[in-house]
Length: 230
Length: 85
Image (tube, rainbow over all chains, first blue to last red):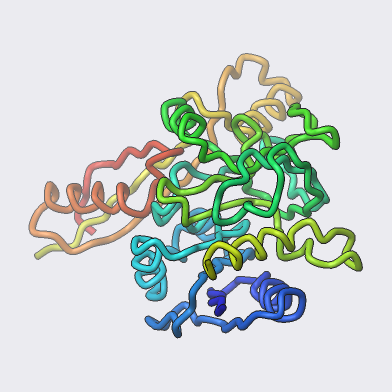
């Protein structure tokens, strides 16, 4: 399977994603330049973390107008898998691929830490190798990660089972202390109504090796493999 | 066509947590400005654009705010009257 990793000016997790896909997963990956219009036959698109366009205006606000995003949007509309990590989640929200927005962390601090996230739903394209309620150790590194949406949208996401990850403590209990950025309802990741676009603030690609402290992120990529290949 | 200058104020949507505004408010309290009740920190954008008249210029900038300058989920915007640039 071929993963296409979009490089925007200011992306800095594209190499991490490339390493995770090619070295840890053993699959093909290509970098897709933001000015191109060609997904190069990629089956899965990754919008990586970083600070595209220096976060000018708002994180993700300019990147969504990059030429490649037209192709990414068409890929998503056709049901193709899109994974937005951190800045990629912000870009996906700005592009309207996912509802809501990511705002400045409630504590105003850039948070770079390993956090725990609880799996809320395991019958998705991205989480089918996890158990519901399982708690993962995954790093976050962001200044604008507070997920915000209107109460109606939040209720809709919950009712439709589209909240996929929530910040929790080691026992899986939700609390304000376990929430690194003040996200509404401890939301760390959501999925599109079609189930093929996932956005999350934590970095699964940085949790793919015991050497790096955790390999809890590997099954996210393996889940995509098992579902998309099937 | 004439050239107009328009200023746009973008502020966090009322009712949403504004940690930056709260931090500034706390600092003002510390400085002795105890009467301050609310602070909101936003963006101020000044742009010049070609348009047939001021109304057309304002309509175009409103469209820009909806599509790019402001986030419809988290921000409110107000545009000032267009003035000849």
